[in-house]
Length: 159
Image (cartoon, rainbow, N blue to C red; front, side):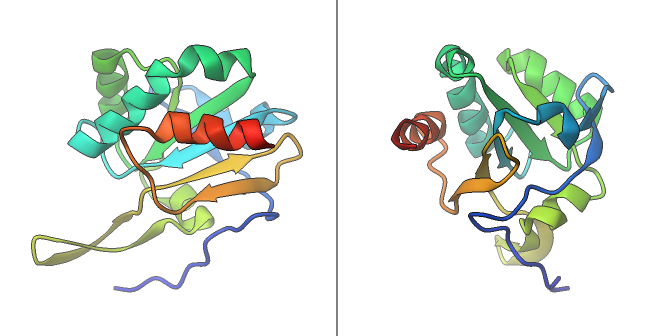
């Protein structure tokens, strides 16, 4: 069941993609050229940790927008699930549906997980900050779902 993937590192170029958002709009990496982008991968919509993480970005949205930062949340959930999640928690940023986990694989976050004695494949929570030139500038391997957006802002203030 193990997939041999390599996680992207600082200095690597962000992978190109074409996927759909919660409204069914096509989203491509080219849309974000010359912008700082936070790409955060999370396991599932409407789960406790993922909800806390998404709401932390929602609550810091004003500061993120002031700085011109784009936030992209990515999971394997369907567009319909993303739409409900977005609307329920009033999330102002883009949620991308990656049903075949191709984007997760290209970032190296798709892998084996264990929960309650079961082993399965899924997204491992990880966040990447991509600079305006399209390079990975920072990687959050460990995410505190309660304070994640503030942690991202702290890193961005140091750059």
